[in-house]
Length: 106
Image 1 (cartoon, helix red, strand yellow):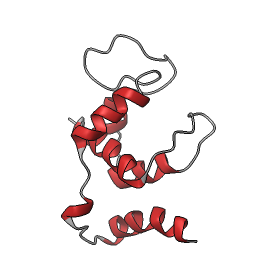
Image 2 (spheres, rainbow, N blue to C red):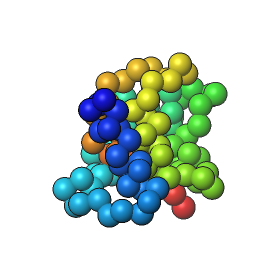
Image 3 (cartoon, rainbow, N blue to C red):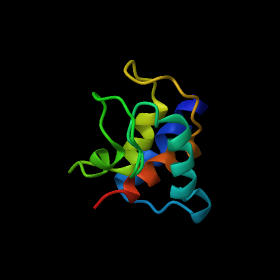
């Protein structure tokens, strides 16, 4: 139950509009480092990347989706999905990657 609450609390805070303390603020630079290490084998995660899988979205295209939300994306990253490898991301790491993707929104 405790594990479930750790995953759902940031999502609920985002939905009801609660402020999250700066100590829990996501670090987009750290997220970029994580994305380059763990995600770049399938996704285009940064400008200038020359190789990725054809059938997966780039991080920039994910960020430009009309329904994009860093909080929802972080929650998605914490939940195992059959199409993605199961990376053991912490809540903080998932938030950092989502913050990085959000920084690509233009």
